[in-house]
Length: 440
Picture 1 (spheres, rainbow, N blue to C red):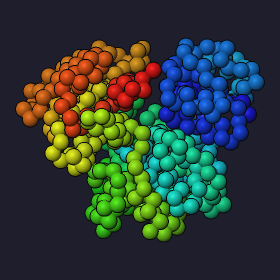
Picture 2: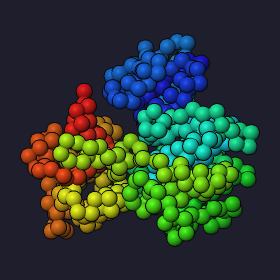
Picture 3: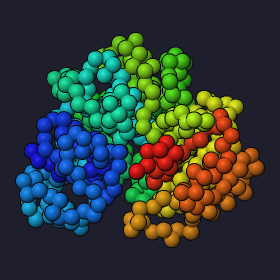
């Protein structure tokens, strides 16, 4: 088929585009800006249109259009597809079609989805099960890709590992054979009314497990315990189980949260009849993923690129950093993600960021997508930094509004040996690219 992707530069959408390319389809797509992701897809043979979305980007021989959940129905390419009577599917709907025909392991939860699904995918690969893996990050072992197409089967079906996102209730499109639940707390409050609404949606998702399927659930998370009270076929994992210590010894990435993620992978492997020694070997070679505590050696300091943008993620990431570097000076640059989200979690951000063990905290202006949200929320990078400063005397807190000014500050400040953590889900990744000399 000829398949066109609207928003092909998204980390999830691009993975599905790669899957279809590797399955022999002809792919085109569009995105607002060029990126590492769009360039990688072009190298695989896709035609990618960069810039403003236009109706003429849709070839008339297109048989299917897949679009990012962020794409509105007045998007000119979406409208043109309708005029040409081309089948339209959102990314979750298209991925949901695959879950029906594959033996699917779906990883869900507020935190840890990308890392855990990558761990499971790599573990199953090293164990020889040859899975197909579609995740929201890039993995070095998969040729720095967010998609791996395998030929392995389980119970007579192709074996698939996916990251199942709860935002926009996307995971309700999926019918997995194994659901991994890593964590659950209030998030995406631009879509969900509150934590109870989120819990109810998770309950509905769990009910879509295929008959005879299994739930692999984090017993250390009380919110998860609440939502699966009436479920059968539950396999629990916990940091209190005996395997936690031995797994921690072999892990290459720090933090108890990653030990917890690995324990879920252990239970998935057991369900898929992988011997424990092969599971442990697979976990021991996992080096982490793109923008999830990604360590980059610089000339006179260590750079860490991290995607954390929720208070809990920030807390456990810094705890992991301190476990790895107990005595080094840590400079954290954190970009808050979207105004409404920052406002909804504001008190949590202040409480967490005022207690983390870093030497310097730098907060630029809040990241927002123009035209997609109300910026008049009364919160800003300035108010956040001021409120954090009031609650702590253990670190330097700076508001540097324009990220373009941060490299000069770091050049002036770094003396050698520091750990610089660049954290956030928005445009702050450009700061990592600039510091590493990769910004176009």
